[in-house]
Length: 191
Image (cartoon, rainbow, N blue to C red):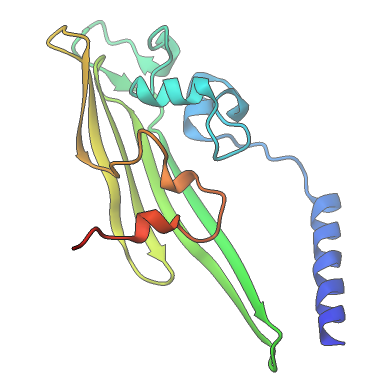
């Protein structure tokens, strides 16, 4: 009986949110900076399209290079000032409910809270970092922080230096659509 009321309550909330919500008018830093929509790189968020993968691999630069509207033209080619500092915040929420003998409801909100920033520093040097403010109620600290240098010594070699998950170039863990992290990321090799 209680489960019927809980289900009805959830359906009412979802219907209210769907019909009462207005469209979002804010866009993340990169989309705002380059005057594009999020769908240029993402489909659906957080999954990246091939263009989004190329944008990230290019040091968060458009393939044709930085357009003058994204940085301040000072007349000095060695000085690169960004007009808008690219910073964002991501919050994941979750809820769980037990129905076996008791009614324990747990709103794990915020389950995860991140401060994210990344972008070009010079014409060849870019950065990216994200900091966990809270993860299940605990401060986790910096998860990823790295610099990306493009075309090292004009050899065509790109180099990434810093702290990042080794699997990120192939399969980013933070882009998962599941609640729990992938099992393989939680395992440590041992004998």
